[in-house]
Image 1 (cartoon, rainbow, N blue to C red):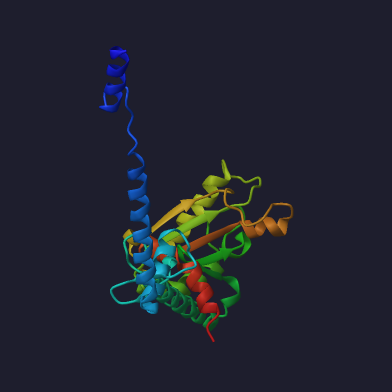
Image 2: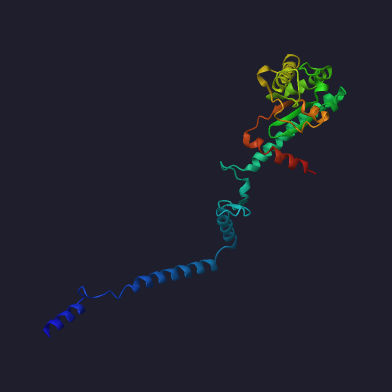
Amino acid sequence: MSTGRGRRGRRRGGQPGSHNDERWMASYMDMVTVLMCMFIVLYAMSSVDSEKFTQLKDSLATGFGQVNVGKVDTAKGVVVPPQDVGKDGTLSKDKLVLALGEVDKLDALRRSMQSSLAGKGLAGNVDFSIDQRGLTVKLVGSQTFFLADSPDLTTTAQRVLAAISPELREARLEISVEGHAANAITGFPSVWELSAERAVAVLRNLVEHGGIPGGHVGAVGYGSARQVNDDSTEALRELNRRVDIVVLSNQAEDVRALIPDALKVRANRP
């Protein structure tokens, strides 16, 4: 009998046979803390400044990838579209302004050359285009600019180059002369040699007769690798036989990349 009472006494005294009934307090304290935080938030929201709340909401939404929501400059309250923010923190719309200025400069050069060509009755012999590389002056058609299966310039080609050389010289920009050929039989070992020699012939004329500094111009032959259309007819083959004089933009790469967008903006100007 005494042994049984001793065992029951040890349980009441919290010996190894006892258990803890106070673990619920930890959960209760957590619940009270959460409720307190909730009431604090509700109170804060009841007196929040609506403008600041909107700025905070937009800023959080932008941070979580909602690209249609403006990025907020909390110091000034200015909303900046995320697409206008570059990797270095500068606004891409500032770069777009530079691209617009570059398009205007290249277009002014184009109009100046077209005016010179028109004055000599040669406007219909040259095509122009502007892209992220710069301004391309296209001498299209071997029969117009070169002797048959030859890199020798025709009289028309020499007159065209003489008309545009002053403007190219005044622009003081790097120039890439790029030869292209049709995928057809030629007396040359390959169309690579023919396209390269025609590009060099144009380069030499620009340097030796047009006064273009030799250090500002280079030549390359692409053969038939960059055709503008197929070679299914002789007329289409003739369009592939061309030399492009590319006036290279001297803007930074990220600005040049925006030139196509600048062209669209410019086309939509009133």
